[in-house]
Length: 251
Image 1 (spheres, one colour):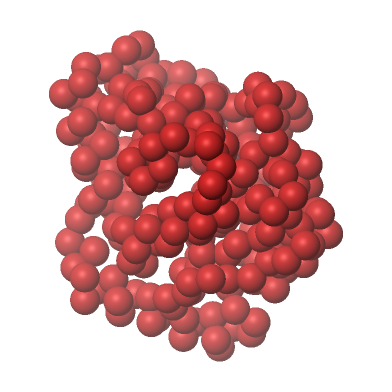
Image 2: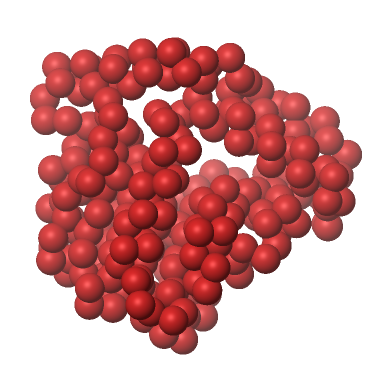
């Protein structure tokens, strides 16, 4: 099921372009996440970071380049995206195939020390509120005091009016940056179905089926409440554009 480096590089580059459609100021969001993690881990000789929903390794690779002594564990349940990460960003992280929020998923991580940071970008919205509550609680248990959970995602405001305006502001920003000039999610996967090297990985992906549970659009305030109940002392956004946030919870 291994991929050639040339194939992995080509498809990861294509993934990076299409993802610009779905994250307002995507590169700036990555940079802000790295800023937070760098600040929290300052002076620690071997920062330990967990990347949740890593996909083909986009965030893990950027963190590894910025924090060269970090030990990064990157998690996803998509066999194709994980294989792209393992091939194209092999040295960035230790990649783990497991489903976030499922029974026993934290044991699969094989963590020997508490985390300094758990990070995620445009991934945790796939979880139901019940699964998200469990996941936040498990992450609080795995994170050292003073460590952080950094979640970059699209979150709702209070009230539908503000949410619609925030989404519109983000979309206008994306239009100015020509983000919608790139192919979308469906087009990427449709094209991937025609790549011969992906055949076995796509078969495995189909066998596993969709992620369990249904994601729910929760407002920022609900995320903050769930994080506090899970054991994080403080939770607040440190960056926002439109409905795109970087939310930081401190253990």
